[in-house]
Length: 215
Ligand SMILES: Nc1ncnc2c1ncn2[C@@H]1O[C@H](COP(=O)(O)OP(=O)(O)OP(=O)(O)O)[C@@H](O)[C@H]1O
Picture 1 (cartoon, rainbow, N blue to C red):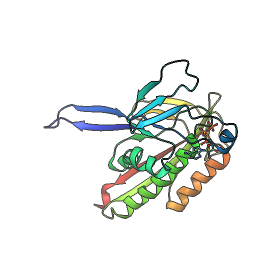
Picture 2 (cartoon, rainbow, N blue to C red):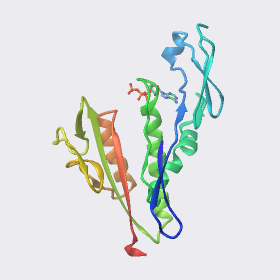
Picture 3 (cartoon, rainbow, N blue to C red):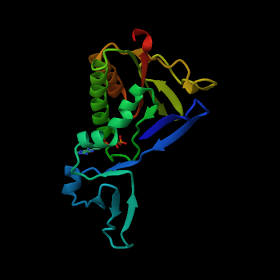
Picture 4 (cartoon, rainbow, N blue to C red):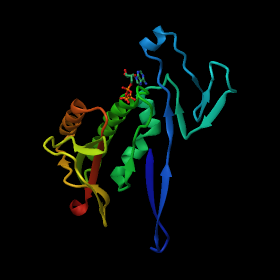
């Protein structure tokens, strides 16, 4: 999870950007198939910040690694969201650019976890908007897949091989990527459903633009 925290010097001096990256680990339980094959979980989670390679074959001494947060196989996706992603997701509503992504080997549980995180984040974002009546929010969503070095727009199936450009103001952008304005929570779920129906590995971008004109 990457959280970018803007900060200003007192008196309006130079704007400094401090970058904060949180790395969390989730260990998934063994599947039925793995249990039937008598597979063993090779990792222990002795506390909320440590994973320990148990080295079942006793070839090397056990090795431990520290992370910002570690979720053991018994942890629910809700807990992973609440303690590992919620703050990052909601920071987008206060004007902070935020990214949540999952990385890991095949079948490690990226899709399973990100699906739960997305569902919870969508619910919380709309709850926040509902409770912040004094402001108007505009949500826009885009979704893309990068496969074999080709960028595909999942909300525009006509598109093929979109180009990455370096925009002087916005940074790296994807040319002609559709940004769909979200009407309500069901519309957003519908858009996410379209993307999940097409492919499993993709990136969503959710833009939250606060419209201050209403107060
Ligand atoms: N925390 C979990 N609890 C129970 N089952 C899980 C958990 N995480 C993943 N699984 C199950 O493990 C299997 C693999 O998970 P998933 O498809 O999310 O992996 P992945 O990392 O996205 O894999 P790939 O990179 O191959 O797409 C799925 O059947 C999923 O339901």
